[in-house]
Image (cartoon, rainbow, N blue to C red; front, side):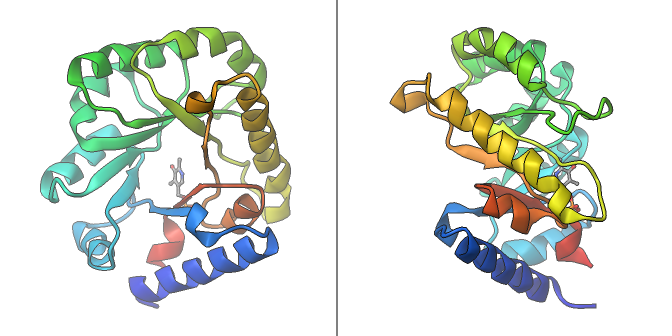
Length: 226
Ligand SMILES: *Cc1c(COP(=O)(O)O)cnc(C)c1O
């Protein structure tokens, strides 16, 4: 089995190739390791390689890990978040990728107003049309947009999506492209200081396609650890 360092190198090389194909600067794409499957030792190996931010999908696990590692390490909540977990989670996070309802956004804004921290907030968008997936559909987003942007303590910096599972990674491309187009469309009505800069899309199998379509954060789990 290759080491984590070897896997990181392979992913980074694939990131550079995808950036080359899309004429993008590799510095504009962040590799976010997703550590939900692994033990502390593997997270430590990534910290030793210089990583300082990790994605976790379950709030309880995120908190347990955050309490184990140094406060220098920051955490991204990437999976579904219930409102009753918001307050506990806030001290540990630098980003939430999975804001998928107005009610959660309201709860976050209220809690953030009291805590004074300012994590990056991404709205999860369901573009694959699968009912099993969380997230705003594009129509729901349009309806929710005035409410979301009026929340005083929520700094929405981008959008996140997940493509449908498929053996053919090219089938993810329309989903990723549509997220970028949606972001661009929203930006036409946003002031310069509120423009959405982040697109969180692409996982172990489909990240090269996501980068070609404009991803700024790729969330990589299994590929680093197998
Ligand atoms: C688990 C997970 C990932 C990483 O998936 P891999 O296919 O293992 O790279 C990315 N995003 C979310 C939301 C996840 O839950």
